[in-house]
Amino acid sequence: MSVYLAADHAGFEMKNVLIDFVRDELNYKVEDCGAHEFDASDDYPLILKKAAERLASDVARGVESFAIVCGGSAQGEAVAMNRHKGVRCGVFYGWDEALQPDTTGNEYSLLESMRAHDDTNALALASRMLSLDSAKEAVRTWLGAHIDVDERHKRRIDQLDQLG
Image (cartoon, rainbow, N blue to C red; front, side, top):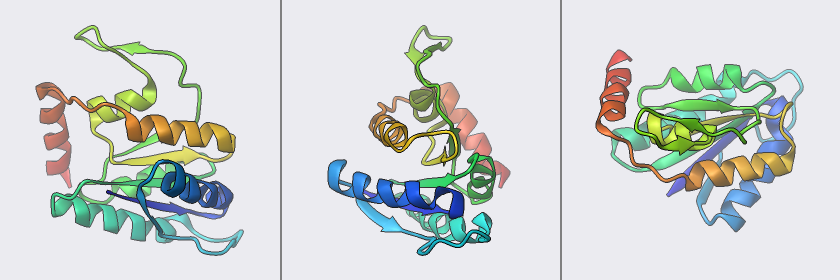
């Protein structure tokens, strides 16, 4: 299973740390989709495009894979990723301790909910709000979340996929 990582200048350091973490500690196949050198004036939409296209291609072929993108607030990164058919990107900027109950009585952290309810296959991390250790723990939690998407969530995901 592949994990595609990408970041602009604001997430450059975090991405580089996460590449080693995801490959060496979590044992995923990793592809660094850029940026490959620090440039304080780079533009995240163009940098993230490779990761989004790789993930979208895998989704279209029925191959399970993930993308992790890092940027200052992660908001623009999520918007850019979600422009690609089949990519479902959630934003994480910290504060994941609270559990949220769903209508069936199950409780999920935000990261778990992203996977269980929205079947996210991409994660945007806010590098200006997360420590490197917090980012690692978020990635570990998100990639390891149990996915048991029930029928109502599958229906909604299918509706999303038909929008674009």
